[in-house]
Image 1 (cartoon, protein in one colour):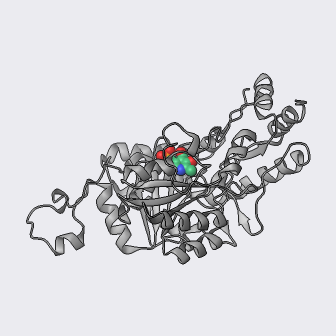
Image 2 (cartoon, protein in one colour):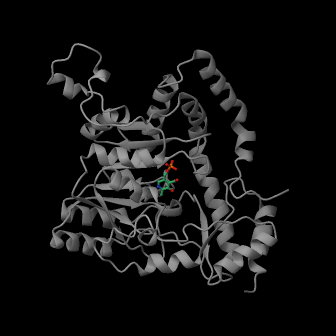
Image 3 (tube, protein in one colour):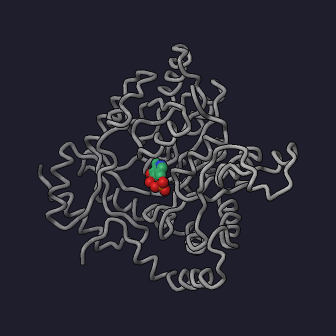
Length: 386
Ligand SMILES: Cc1ncc(COP(=O)(O)O)c(C=O)c1O
């Protein structure tokens, strides 16, 4: 049987019947938009994240944009993002009218470098064209960014720290989730994510009441919030009083019904992921350029298991001939992407991002990866002599 890159089948066997029953319930009750399952899932997500609020939405990209809009980020603002991440982290910034400023990553964790971030903020402030307005850190491949250090930098410059945990939702530092250091955490329920649904979906968790109120408004066409209504005279439904230009970004009730069941076993799956990753590390350490490095006290959700090889493309071709799928996240850092190369503010040395984009390669991973399949993958990797 072909090895899947991310195997969703075992999980389906485990909880598929419950998911199907939940979905059927939605089909029958008919509240397809913002139905009761959406509220239940939001409450469960907030509880999982130890957060006061959870706002579900249509995808992880919108989740980040909703945070920026809710914070009032816009024209003339600079938002600091890592150069080595999925494009969505930076993409949402110009959507608000602001400009992304690319910052290099740390070579061991692939996450934004707090020292270079500090320098980039100072440089943009000195340049004076843009106003430093926010930082978005990414929990790349599942490992939390260095939030204690990043929060210091954010405090020093008076900027909100946002967490893009599309890959890392559920990750911890000394048992604490990124939200302990951030104003809000965005995540994605894209099917291949550690907590994925059966389509598109996303969410924001936050403890900030004012931000939550604004995001609720932006999520559905900029409708009036209770605060807006209190200061305005309008005698019809608040949703037909459009106070700001928003979007339509709701999580489908059917997806919430799927996610309710998946969240139930998510904590256990994070533990299973540790075992699979530890076994990969044991079998591959010393045999490739590098295996993933997880800092002391950090627990990754292992959205990806990523190794490095000097002849990465040769290794990928070799794996392909042996029927082992792999993926390259990411072959081009964002500042070198045609659609983003004009964003040169900060002018930073992004050499680590550039180097990593040439050596990283991710191997098949799932919490249910069995040992025989894992052995086959490892044998394929270690049989490469290029
Ligand atoms: C780091 C990161 N940010 C944002 C996103 C966007 O999520 P979505 O695909 O749900 O819009 C993704 C995943 O695709 C991601 O990996």
